[in-house]
Length: 134
Image (tube, rainbow, N blue to C red; front, side, top):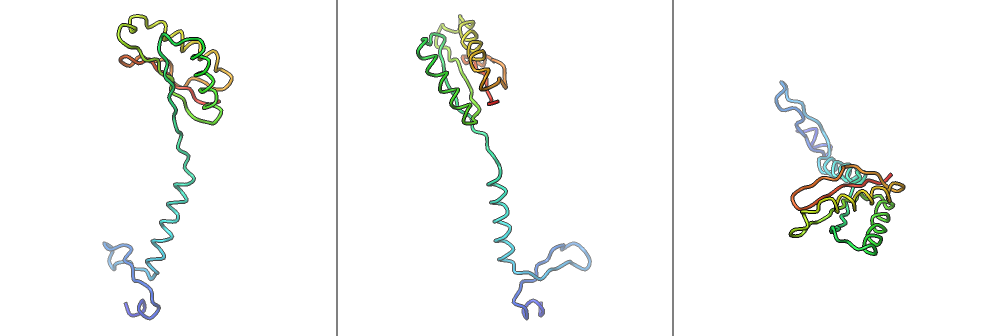
């Protein structure tokens, strides 16, 4: 403790359960600051993959299909994952094949810019698949 006071440092107990306990002389505030700085640097280097979602209905018109397909292409080129959902309302669920046709057409049209991560899956009244950029 006397040595720590003379050098204006803190005496930090590293391993309290050892006999004798292991201690270290250090500037504790500086240590905490450097530790936070390292954590921020690690966080900065992490890449979080964001996901965009585009919704269709089984009755989506040709113009709307092309418009939404263009948005999906742009998202994939920017590096986003894209979840494409066909949303069934009311009795539209009786014609599931229309949703599958839309998704199959999208898979074929977007084969140059993205690939399918998850095949079409029906979850309740939603049919969805996920594209990832090439």
